[in-house]
Length: 108
Length: 114
Image 1 (tube, rainbow over the protein chains, first blue to last red):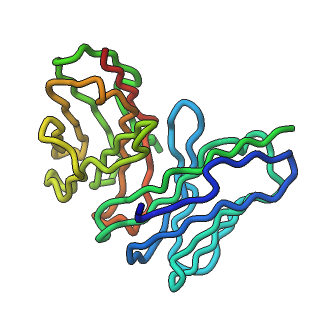
Image 2: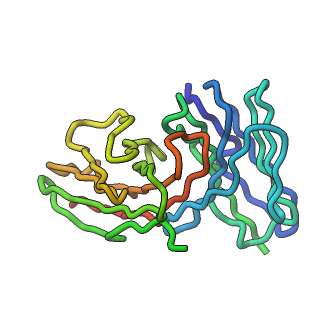
């Protein structure tokens, strides 16, 4: 069983839809990272959060430390949001363990 | 402010050769970590350096090694390349020696072993 699991693996949406990507982890952590990877490979760090909710533009990330669950929401999705979204949890505070990623495609 | 710079961006090597990849962190960042990404295994942690010391190593064979210089630039080396080493290699830098802090990733080096 992976220590960090994401769902769904693939997601297709129409422009304007509300998107939710889920991440569950089994390791004890104090923070969780959400990353975005576009075709070509470069990774952008979207959020690091340890409690509650963070918002940046149309992106919202929430975390429940007790339930070991985090969600990434995208409001009013746009084709440029098409990417792979990855959650990552620090293990022993030293290294990141990654989920398998959620491939999102948003069609106009 | 310059981001994390990885060189080269693309590399093609032959089985049995060795390769050295470079990562220049954001100025002032002292932690550099390396990751391998393959379609089958996803993103996996390779190793992390802080102030020229390797603090943590992932589950990779000894053919994978790295080092960090006094200016925080880091290199990773893979010897006796195998076809399965074909992957995107990413590095990330952080100002602190903890994964509970923000990371900035480079664009990666795509290595193809033929």
